Image (cartoon, rainbow, N blue to C red; front, side):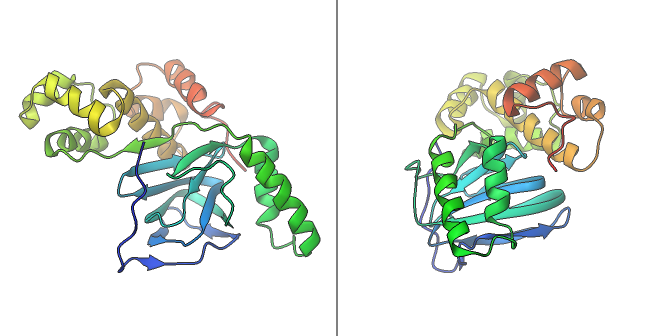
Length: 250
């Protein structure tokens, strides 16, 4: 699991506000941190959140819990509507950034709570209570792509970031970066917390989310990201995110 680190003194601290804002495709928010916990959700588009430990990419079926003090930055893919909720409560007792499953009800609660139309204090308090209840029951699902620290493994990861469809084996990558297959496999478990095939699949899913948000077709995305067939891509995507890649969040 990624570790939350205390941000350096020079990092920009911002209030963990509640609200929504549009972010144009390719735009983002520079590195910052909050002194309160925050829920981040893309009501439209796809959002990536990066810390020094790795990157999360969140489609419409996922929200990201960001604990207070976590140094992070955002980037939008496709025209994105960012919804944020600042909280002093920690209903799931989470100490690291975590992707949460967003049910249809939780989605509507997030949209309503961050809407400018919800101004009456009594209404907001009621929504907040139901929102916290729904968060307590949310499943946690991996949309996290950890970053490697060892230069050899980081080199392999960088090659795959450049071409997610690269199908070379760990043995073949090892010849490029100067490490044995066994060494790289050990580093994957120690630094990434998963096997090399698991990490590559997660990378491909991240790349697929971004390409879909930018308007590419499902078939083109499947081949560009390394799946042998469109049907295999659709199956993997649905198991990971709970919906087919052709579905769009509003």
